[in-house]
Amino acid sequence: MGCGGGNSDSSAVENKTNEAGQSVANAPGSILIELDKSDDEMLLAFYIGGMLPDGWQLDSVLSNVDSAWWLHRPKEGLDLPPSMETLFEVAGDDEKLTWEEFEPAVSSSYYAVRNAPKSVADLKIRYGDWDSESWFVHELVGQMTHFRRRLSVPKTALFAALKGLSTLSDPIIYPIGTVFVGEHLGGESVREVTAMVKREDGYWDYFAYGSEGKLSQFIEKKPDPLRVPTQCVGCHFGDRLFEPERSFPSAARPGPTGERAYFVPEYLKNASLASGLSEHARRSDHILGLYGTLYLASLIRDVKGGTASEEEAKVVANLGLY
Image 1 (spheres, helix red, strand yellow):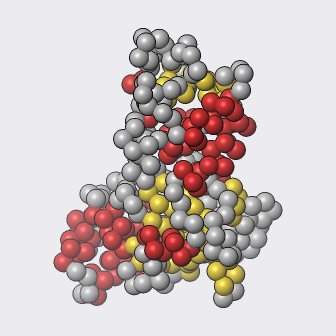
Image 2 (tube, helix red, strand yellow):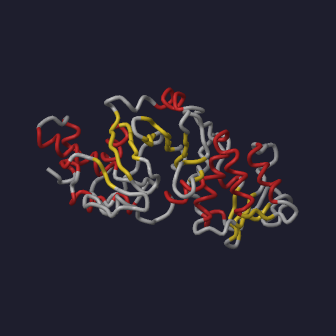
Image 3 (cartoon, one colour):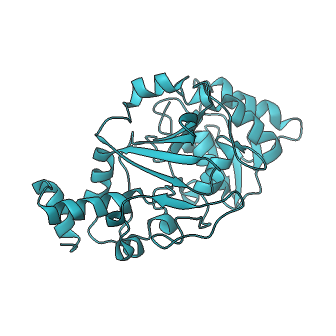
């Protein structure tokens, strides 16, 4: 699927007109979108952008007129994909699309539209085996689920993001195609697997797999399961701080289901680094967690121990950390 246009600039599409010179607010077949969320623009860029065919731009179907969002048909000769036709259908006779209509429509087609790997085995084939040494791995128990989670991300993606920093206050931005994998552990078994994959438009796709390794629209959580991708987006687009990230490297208070903690070696618990990057709070790339913080701490240790590569040492030196 296409890039979708990413973070659209609403001012750039103000009072947009269609091919006939009509305002999209009055164009036949246009529908008004009233999600009534804190950031409708970001949600629409994520969902609508993810539906667009390759090469289409977000403003070819989505416009902001007088602070209202409108979904309209593209210029003549271009057909909408079925998932977008559905949005026009569910809007109904009032030609208005509310969150109660929008959410089930986009959720039901999300995995198919985003061509999600159908199983954990397919996920590994497409993105690589996270059990290899080329992935950075750590474990925690936190807010997302009561399970202990084993989190993995390619070291190359982490290094690329850190290489882009000039100071610790710079945003941590991951390359297109970066994948984060979370294994939810129940004793010796993997109960669930979650994955985030960075899209070409800069947003992330969210996939979840149940105990049998097949796609699931829910993640286990007490008292109620989390819906994918709706509630994933809600947290990643928000600004609420969660534990144990908020207190790291200090110990966090237990949560409703028990301990909340990072299970990492002491040399990764770098207080000044955690404070300087403030990674979880800034979530510059909509990433929750401390991936860059922990990996940079590991690079500092390698530099001090003389085992870092020349390029790794340069990244650490450029940040004034050794």
